[in-house]
Length: 376
Image (cartoon, rainbow, N blue to C red):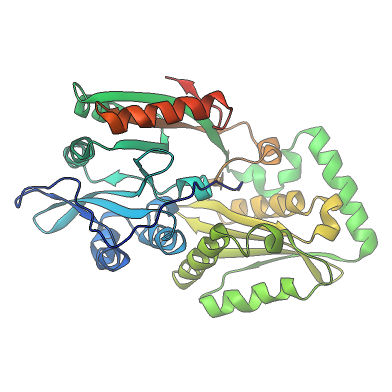
């Protein structure tokens, strides 16, 4: 996954969040701290299975909130009926370069948390509440089709403008028995490249793959400690360990290990670990969370070799698909032509804040600072 970006944020100070008020009988409330978020866990897990789609699970949202709490102000919009959670929008509020609400984790991960809901009535109440806030909203990465866009367009009719965009789709592999030997499914050029580097690896020493399912954060840490013992740096150390994204990965991987969802795949050459993949196995799918490798072996394409083995492993487990989470890397697209349609939307309320957000987005797009997007 590629890295996101973060704008500098002003100090939050001590003031409370109260840009508008919901009535006492309103089914919508806003949670703005980690303590309030933690109290949602039981109801959250009833609405979205803890073993379901990673971007909807409480563990993912909690990890994002803990890792990125200094970047923006937490705003979790929830719809409750008869004591049960019916819809959730895990958002944060940013004030620079223009005030807006956006999905938690979107900038940092390019794999943002998702809005999810029990039914369209709950979604409508949630979106109406966002429109009532009179703050610009930025949502990325929701599936094309479905009720999301028309619900926003209806809620903002006469109150603002809704802009919809197609964005870079996420590649995935639809698995079947033919993927038990992935090298037979790859294009000839890629297959030739991988055979060449595999022979080079074997000239150094025995090539081994290991798939491990840690059951606790301690077991995960023990395995990860192996990659720190080598003489050359790993991409993990350079790109993630000291970053906010790295904090998220460590937190979420620990939670996923405790739930039995985490898979750690390691490539060894001559007994030495040279590449590592962290993945989630849920909903009969295999979700790639993170990959890193020893830079000394970069010319041997360790991430590609590890991906081939992981695809074969996922197929052998009878899983339905192999999913590339986050902003797609160019090399990942060499494995598949399948891409899931993704959309984004921006709302601009009819006020000064909405106009400021529109000007900011227009300027940002003119400088080429957005992912490929077209008006829908």
